[in-house]
Image (cartoon, rainbow, N blue to C red; front, side, top):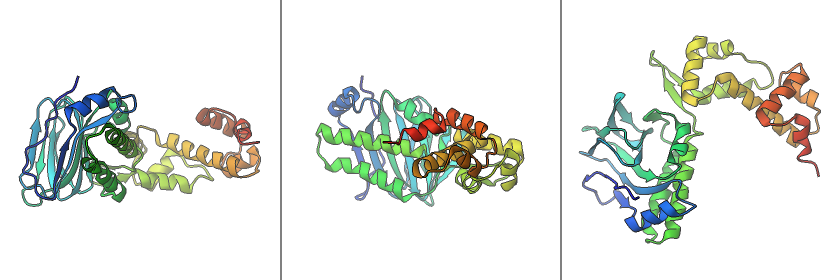
Length: 293
């Protein structure tokens, strides 16, 4: 069953974009095996959107907004948030919200309404937060511009299938972007910076206390904030990075398993092998054998 799409009636300027997938094509996308999981319902770009405001009490689809520049605001059940350039708004179906442009410095935003059988799976890695501060990313701007190219392609299904996959790629790319969290003190914890420290210590050990000290946080607050931002414990991610490096060493060189273990800071080769098997799913020797012949 095709749901209605509730877009704003903001007066569109000459350089603005607003495009709705026609109902016939929407029904085809909902049935098509390549697009039923996630497909666009409407999309657009509002530059310097003076007077832009929208309120939805029971939205029937999912909405993604990316602020390119300027300022705005968002209200959800969790409160009111100021929005600026580089902020991403993720507003799921069924959750009431309101948003709008700042009266002095109105935002410029990309937006896309979307639906599909697997949308919750695409959104799950992004977490429950409605607002993510990811910065102005040229690659993401280009992804939105490419998606907006759909309006120039005519109303034939293959172009809309391709657009659905562009949207799916955009959503999955968000799951691997570095994220930043704001602490109660007003400071920022940058996950990319934390993982840079982890990569600098791939060849030795690094415990939770040492990681927390690098960012002048208690062990508890560091671990809690990192898990809230990534969904993983910090040491779990450190081990994942170590095992990924172990895979590269096994792929690219002739070092023995014991040498690789020592190079990654593990004196006990059997402990290293157990960790490798847990993360990779097989013993280091079996992994290396995959690439012979």
